[in-house]
Length: 355
Image: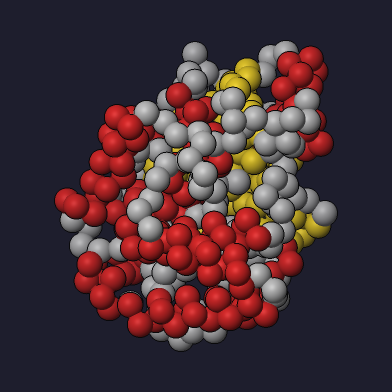
């Protein structure tokens, strides 16, 4: 029985798979693990490539594009371990990555999620993500995005885990209801971390667990699809998770933050996609992608939804307990993030709003 299951979601990512899978084969001093490639309906011969070149890797074919959330949830249903490790296909982990994640878990057993230090594929001296942060205005950001990696060499607690490379206990993931499949892609990791926080769970950034990341190998850099999902799911994450006292207290900053984000995308020529995302956030959420394909059973969706909403309904964590985990000001973060928009920080625009 493996201690870990590495779940790699793939959608037309054959060009990335060799680098990722070869790096996993080179892991040193890692606990026993299995590798699972979940294929989301690729048409680039990814499945045959993995089956032929990597016979020890298990393959799950979803039969269609279920998005990041649905595809990874499908992988979990086929996992055989107590711990889950989610890894993007456009990554190359260092040889000690898994062992460092495992060591961090053993040293910080109080933390249910362990997130990696992501650096850029073409420049490992620069950080892509040192864990996720969350602003009181409702926006998520990547700690250290675009900054020198040497400045983020210290491990510490963070608000959330980056979906590109993190580890979580399976029982915790299942108790949370997994990734919210209504999100399809973008912000689903922020939503998961937020729900974990509401249950009083903690997230640890393991600085020595290093992964090179190409960034948006499947979705594309600042594409209309990214803008639509980021703006819709940015609203959903804030509305569905934030305890009512904080929701009321941050309504005005959130509106300003949201308006500034729209203005930013208008200037990029992507205002239409951003507006569609905002409008979609006002409509009832459904699982799967916008045209309804890839829906799970209604019973299964309802049960998972109940688990996702349980923390907020039970008010196990009140606003006063959550406030210290959410940053009050965003000036410095905004300046750093806006300088690196071409790299796509995955969480949505960070704007000049003082909270």
